[in-house]
Length: 281
Image: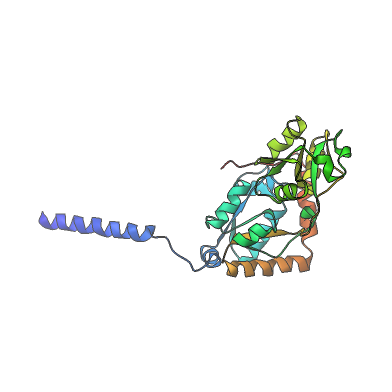
């Protein structure tokens, strides 16, 4: 009986040690090494920014996430020889997840700003058309009257929190009232219902809103832009991954892939299956 008890105790101890060994998470010198070892690249994006990232309601699972940035993410994953895993979350959460390394990187219509340069590794710029024009969209009957900055004095203008548009709004229209929002879909409805005077957004986004809502139009006045490219966001210090992505971006530019990707994404964004989805934290 003593031998059986001892044998059982040894078996339980061995099982516990085995489980402990299995549960120990593997550590890596860099995110790049983790991606290459696990054969997965986890990318955060906020699918409420057509035509860069949005949802195709005719599809499910990972396939439902579409848009220019999704195509770019797939291209990068293919070049690295790994599987792409989209991690949908709010725009603010995307940036936080990169900082804490809960995701490997984020591709979500980011522009280069001094604050982001201080806190993240930012890739070389890719595709300029989406960021080249930053505008304000409002009710059609009001839009033609806004031709200069002073026309916005005292007006309530919405902009997504932690976005380029918010920075531009506070810098170039200091006498307007900035209304911070997280959900672009809700924000455009607030414009339509007269709860706010306008919404600051990329012109590509505004064109899609305008096509979907006949009561809206884009103001003649536009923000001044100095850097009109988008960038991939990576955790600070992850230079190995940064170098690999910059090499792939250079290849995309050399092959002239961006224009075709954007046209395809824009056409899909105009379809009946396109939907911008805001993810709650």
